[in-house]
Image (cartoon, rainbow, N blue to C red; front, side, top):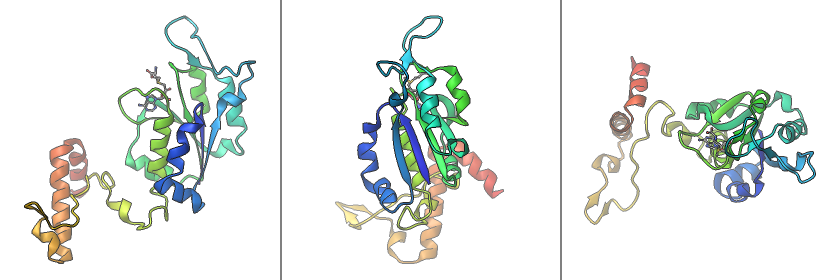
Length: 229
Ligand code: SAM
């Protein structure tokens, strides 16, 4: 898969792309990620990409020209899934990570300043928000999407099935985990996990997962109940 990220701050991605699962997925050529500084495509003398809003008001607005030209410079951009990150979009969910992980090519536009010229929206297929809060720019949102999508591409995680039990994969939060020591200052690991009976362990994990979801996320729990009826 190829992911092209249109951003004014490509250096923000340096650490993100050179550590952990992202760096391995890139090294293993499972994903190719390009950060494209769309300021480079500005026609203006001083590489300006924003301007004051028509009608007045606070803040600066990202103009369409540099973004349009940056998009055109990407080979086969027409066929890519083009995502714009904005707090006004659909809230990102694990199910979208699975859906988008099947794409060959994704383009993500990171906004900045007060917002986008409304006509930029027409160049993109979908608007995604990562939650009901406002960030300074779209870079963190693009990293969230890129990470969540990449980790569910086959062969990215070494134990390939491990993401299937992740929270949200089946409308449930994941069960609790424990590791050594079995007793830390009197805080003990549940007995069932120590007896090697895999059937009992699976049942315990499922019960815990359901209990945890019911307590913490009644909205998800309702969806889960529908799947077992
Ligand atoms: N004035 C805009 C509004 O109220 O919708 C917010 C602009 S925000 C300061 C600048 C940019 O950060 C946005 O254009 C978007 O790209 C990104 N951004 C901010 N919050 C986001 C969120 N929750 N999800 C995705 N992107 C976000």
